[in-house]
Length: 329
Figure 1 (tube, rainbow, N blue to C red):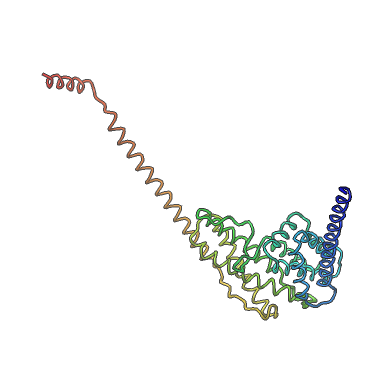
Figure 2 (cartoon, rainbow, N blue to C red):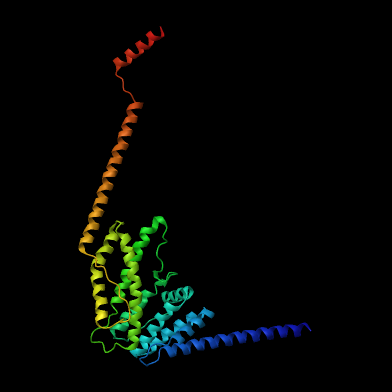
């Protein structure tokens, strides 16, 4: 009787495990099919329903994020078709934008560990190479609760670390904007295709948000001092004219034509000079305060010594003793 009960229990467990394994296999097959449908050879935009399906499937089985990353890596490694490669990169970008915080973290970890790869060593198309480089940096950003892009690993904004956090954020914004500008297709590119337009729209939208964070950071940077702050402003003096021209170029070529481009505030060499002058004044004030503090300390020290140690010569000492004797008498 006992043997029969155990046999039934093991049979039930085996059946349950088999059903679970069957469901998992079906889920992975559905992910694989959806990835294939998103990355076909036709120059047509990726359908939202397949992106949503992948995100839904992964959210119900978080461990499948590793399988998804391997499918994306394999798709890029196997193809020699620029359109397929571009659609695969675009799929990854859209998944990053549509996934929840856990998905972003999982994909970022898989990228850092090398399990997710964007191997385009075969490719000579400058836009594809630039886009993969952009996405490599994009892995280091998340979408926060306010819907803004935020760099991962920024120092916590405690009061004593607030300046460091702002400097870190601005520096990351500058790298992001550089990567975005690198994605401008050459005039002679045989595209732009519909897929490229879709990719550029997302790149531009995200660059607008990062530029807004960049401007917010610069507004606070004026209160900072130090070599890093000055270096960031020097870089902004070079970068902001380039960013202005980049957006103007996109508008002239009808790239991102439905988007509302921001007005870029050019950082001038005069602003860099003003910050350098401000830093020099701060340093001079610090030196003056340090010297004044040292002088006050030495004056107190000398005063204290003169009160404790009184030097008498022999004649003064005799006079004092004599006076003391007369008083007692």
